[in-house]
Image (cartoon, rainbow, N blue to C red):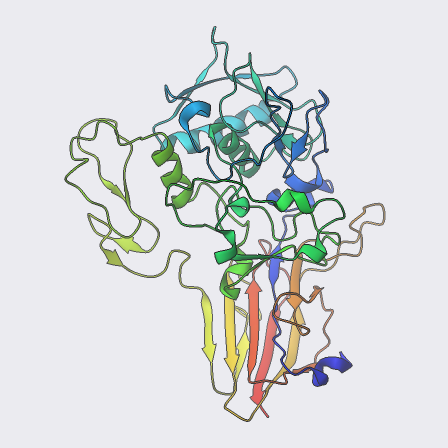
Length: 433
């Protein structure tokens, strides 16, 4: 910490991310992180798996081409009848069946797609749990049953929705060609030999904007050489960092892309007369006229009233005067609450932050786990060396009275609440010196 006073330009970012605790190590991890930690490089059938959970197709010439990302560029790999037959392998237990059925229902509710139990159809999704890892193909394949594998640790609703998204024709959000407008890849933090997992291809996002909360977006630590210590993806807008890969369901933009891919507004009698605004789209046609499906924080028949930005109004804000900041509800924690404080000192002064209290969930205490001693459940990332990365803390790692000082007039704090909300949280005093 002694070097804190020596840098010409310092921005400190505290990034807090929560992980759900469960009985085994796999369930201690965030769902989107599991997809890159639990899946092998090849399936038991010898098929190559890339980007953690996508089974690679082998073209007729045996050569792999750059894969298209986010959504299939043509309709050849879609379920054109909008009906997807499915079946369960004998390895799937009752609990996992219920999770898969709920995941399919979530896609059905927001699209014109229908999942039906397979009878005699040759092409269908076969859910199974007898192989390690979470993986499947992208889009419809001309084979007798295409596997959607949800191995040990993958039997979770969020992962099931993600894998079903692949089978519908979705690639990963963070592999979009336009990701550089939102994300920065920290190549030096990626595991050796895994840089190719971040290679973008020829995508067609159908004009749907990038969504860091997409059900198809990975964790910011995916393929990290130091999991729970280093990120591989950081947002250009620091406010979004705590949201990366933290979806809790199919988002508005996920639904919009699926509805666009499958032209779900076909048959809407008002298709040419009702023009939705501010990203809104026509609902899937079922019976009679369709209505506008509006993005978060908009209102009105045509989504014409803006109430805030797509990701919502997070607590925090821009600070230009001395004050005390606390996590929401301090000293009682609030779950699933995110804050961003951007602190700017007057010209000629620097920012000084004095930690008066620092209390979060402790590091993992399981000697037999590979994650023992790491901030698995919660993390506060303190960035002092540069704007992109820093060190992770949790528990009571930072003692009361610890002071950080910037050598510029800029300081940044990001906070993300844990689902269990243990500890008292953060209290810090801001001064300009």
